[in-house]
Image 1 (spheres, protein in one colour):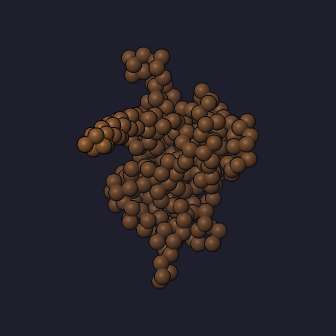
Image 2 (cartoon, rainbow, N blue to C red):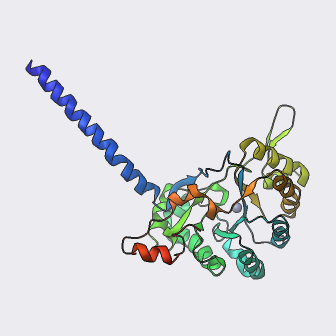
Image 3 (cartoon, rainbow, N blue to C red):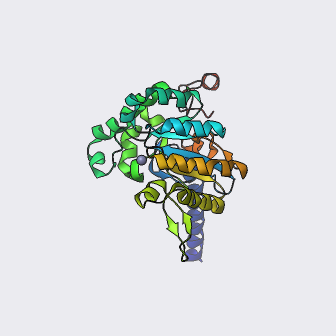
Length: 290
Ligand SMILES: [Zn+2]
């Protein structure tokens, strides 16, 4: 009898402890999700299946970005540009136009560095890469716009998040941002292109139409998502010229990263010392959704 009572008490205590775990665990998870720079790339755009596309162009600005801006304007589409900071000083007019025409300007490191182990071991090198581009793009970033980062080659290390979140400015970034569409070339058994990645299309010497078909098929299957493309090769621009009017005609909606609700959970929470009323009336860079 005594043994039975003890075991009943023990199981009751275990149940209460377990319940406490479930009550407290979600709170700590929310805090982690709001830990600004993430330890791994953010893959959940929430756009797949919504017939909404976020076009992202990496590695520019280049001599071809102006032509791309023409095509986007003709189709009335706003995009997000992941900028390589070292290129900004050569293309100031392009940057100004990008900002003027309502595109979101984001950070893709200063020299397109592969941010591997060396950068985790030397925090000052990592900070240089991200802060250097933050400074370069700052004059062109719309006040109140969210700050976004994408890692070159998708290479990232857990330790990077802690290093960057210790910086009072850089911790306002959301990232690294991954993609849903445009990651790789896939062909089926009959040799049909099922998906494409522009840089790899050009390394295989495909023409712009063939590459565009790969993008179009992946988009048709996924029905929405963040699309990865580049604006440093002329063929990518021809591809957008072929692809974009077709997508517009099919009725897809186009958004910038700043309009993606699923990314808001990764934004830096308002600090405790900012009165709520002020926070509402004065947009602060990286803190409020547009
Ligand atoms: Zn890149």
